[in-house]
Every structure is written in structure tokens, then in C-alpha cells.
Length: 168
Image 1: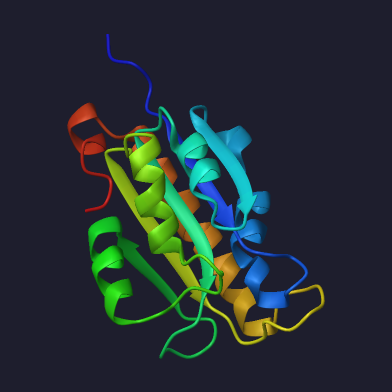
Image 2: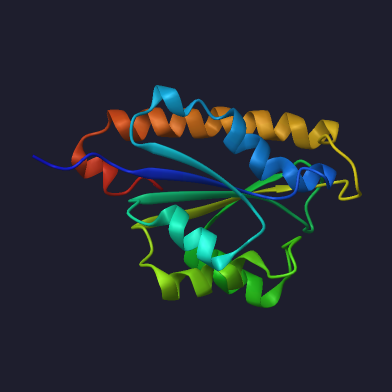
């Protein structure tokens, strides 16, 4: 008998910097009670120790964060870890003092990585002090939430062979 799949949903950001809180918002609103084996972890800042603790023992880690980038506000982007790490060497997307790719690289020194890591970024518009997401980021956060729910349903309903590659 195989052990149950373990998926962790990690939210990064700061709810007091408007759109920077999108990762925390998505994790907070994800209906984990519908999916046994899912752990929701709101971290806030990109802390390597907290990331390592969050994904410890997980098969899949999805990290959700706000980002700055060349795309319009509200754009949702998804990166596999290796692509994200390489791309971040060329561009700075992070809103954190310690960029997410560097925090993840340090976390990998502390704990082995899950089999699959995906970073979901939502391009923010407003990173000023205050609460609440901008309209386009909130709409995108809802779209991302629905996307993750559908993907989670598909993964947990899949055969073990399909679970081996949830990022296809």
C-alpha cells in the first residue's frame, strides 16, 4: 500500500503592503478541508528556515507570492523551481529583501526538496502600506484559487502513475 500524497501550499507576502499579501490571501482561502493530505502554511517573509519546515515531508510544494515583473498587474505566472531559479539570476521579480529564489536555495540546504516545486506568482500593482488587494490582483487571486482547487482535485483523484507528474 502506498502512503498518501502530501501537498503543501505555502503563502508568502505581507498583508499590510496591499498586493504583496496575495500569497497569504490564496492560502487563507484555499479549502484544505476538502483535501486530506494538504497543508496550508502562511509564512509571510521568504525565510529559508520556515520554507524548509513548511515543505518537510511533502511530495509537492506550491509557493504563492506576489511579484514585480514586465507583465500587467494581475498576471498569473507559474514557474517550475529550476526555471524560476535560473530566471531570477537574470531578473529580479521578488518583493522581499531576501529574494524568494535565494531563500529557496538556502532552504534546500536545510531540508530535501519535495519531488515537485512550483512557484505561482501574481503580478502586483500596489505595494504601498495598507490593507486589501487591488481589484485586478484580487480577481487574479480568485482565478488562481480555482485553478489550484481543480489541479488538487485532479491530483488526488489520479492514479499513482499520474501523481508522479502533477505538473504536466
